[in-house]
Image 1 (cartoon, rainbow, N blue to C red):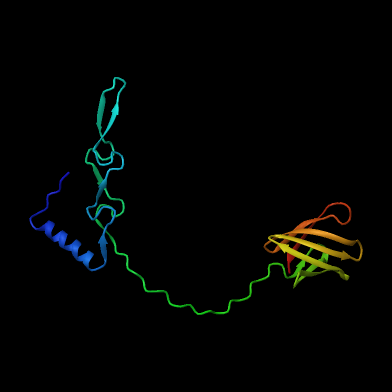
Image 2 (image 1 turned 90 degrees about the horizontal axis):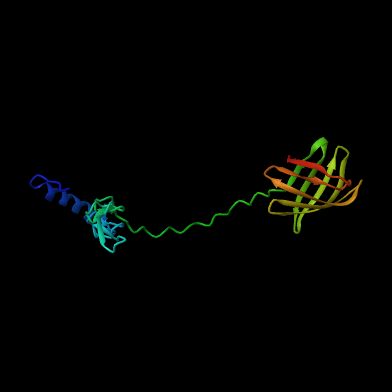
Length: 192
């Protein structure tokens, strides 16, 4: 399909395009070289497709994608032949090294359990020092490590002696299974 422009209109359109390109607002599309058209990807710019039938005869068919036009609208510039100009940006300004706040320790602090029980984690060089307690005060102490979301607690309790407890850290919740009494008891702590 061919568009007819009134006399002088095409020159005016070309001047407008040229002004935008020269002003740095737009630049020529490098995909289509500013033509707004690219070769059809289906027929590779031939306009038809060929196939051989069972009798060995070659059958040419009009390309269903471009309709035999051989070219299609450029997808980069949408057929305008222009794209937004890319301006070289100024080099980045040097950043000022500001002190960063210390990362928040996910485990440190007191965690409250059921029926007045609690456990407290205090960071040290090897992980954490732990203190466990309840309504009667401190009932045990030991150490703990945090690896990912797994907390391994190695402690000694006044009632049960030495034990190891594995807990899962999920936000403000610690939960796991306590087996120190010989049978599984679910335990859960919430950050105080």
